[in-house]
Length: 620
Ligand code: SF4
Ligand code: SF4
Image (cartoon, rainbow, N blue to C red; front, side):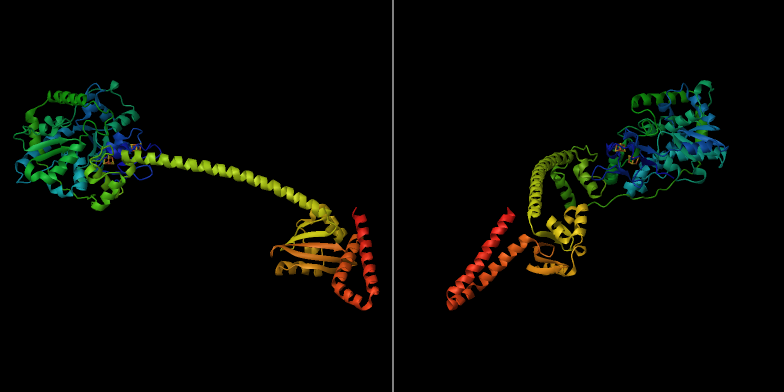
């Protein structure tokens, strides 16, 4: 069975009108503006959330299909009509046409709930006249009964132990038509749908539908009054029970004393009246010493009525209908019926279904009030949240039923704080954007400089007469100049044509192992090798290798000793080295050999000058 109330999150606009309408906080709102959720355990079936939800996201459980199944069952069916029909079907010319329309659905008999009101009124009179010091709250409205069972279970003993009008008439019609007869209730409330599920046997109501659903069924079965005749309501007929939908209607039906000086019962109607009256009953009944007749007020404006508002107009329609019904009233017959059915057992028991929650600690309440910007002495509040004061609101925040955002002043304060933090965030973002732009400019500039430097380095490398190669720690070529390629020979030149600068080439495949060993040594030990002569085939190479990035990049300068300019430069270098190294010795020899030694030095210097001159010519 679907829950009595459900919420379609696709339709919900998060206006929270339902939350404010619910008298028992069965609708919960969570921080962050989420879709509210409904606690069916706490729900008392008043239907106020259905009426408060403008986009119709909240719906009550439909019984239309159950009703159709009942009509098509072929069973004998009795429909029980609430006296509120007059307030709903003012578009139907005569209530007798409405009776025929209901029978056209597949119903054999149509009875009035009003007779059950008369019957219960008498039962109440005798209970209250013999109350033995216990004060009672009427149990005619299932919403009030559910409210007491769930939120004031201490008062279960004060609920009048009598069935509701719907169940009372069900027993009457089964007494008349036998226990097999099927029963459908038609009224303005939705709590009757769940109430119907509680009973079995001769008290069982097969289906309870609203006036709204009855209209839907008329439409689906294409039933219209225009081609139908009048039909009468089946007996037993009522007396003043048809006044029940009016304010004080039950007291009127029971002919109870309504004089405030002498009456033994207060009549109260409406959501707030119900909540306040039951709270007062609990705390002050010893002093008040009155019975309470309480109804939620759904008879003329319930969730199952299609037309909202216009209460006085609806009251007028009900009074007009009651007067019309009384035109054919036969007191003796009514009285006989009453006496007969008063024999029925209309008693019932109640079951506590405690949904109360422990009150949070004073400290926690104070903390929440402080968060809301309130104190215990300043907690009356604007009541816009739907609570009686800020403390009750704080209690429900502590219980997880609502969120601080439901407080308008808190929401406004949070919103301005949010706007300020948004403003600060925007400023930070603008600053970050500016820094990013500057950084991009700088990077672009550095990139251009690096490109220029790279081009310059490449150009310089190409100008060098020595071969240059730079490798990474995997011995892959990072950069090499053309001289290096030429020194290595034809195979390297071919690779260079495909991959300029031999970038990415494996050095292992370009040079022999003894040469590789030198690069590996430099990369591993981070030590330079200078002027090492190595022989590759017929070539004599002079090699210097040095670390560029420790353990990661190394560079090599390779000179082909066969090249004339290298030979000359090398001869000059090496002779200069010989001269430098032996200068001291030569000078000592000079001392020993006199002029002869000076001649030797002259001779060596002239060789140096000769080669230097040749080198200049070659360079130019
Ligand atoms: S009243 Fe309807 S639309 Fe508004 S929050 Fe409740 S379910 Fe959503
Ligand atoms: S039907 Fe009434 S009690 Fe249930 S959730 Fe809606 S407003 Fe609350």
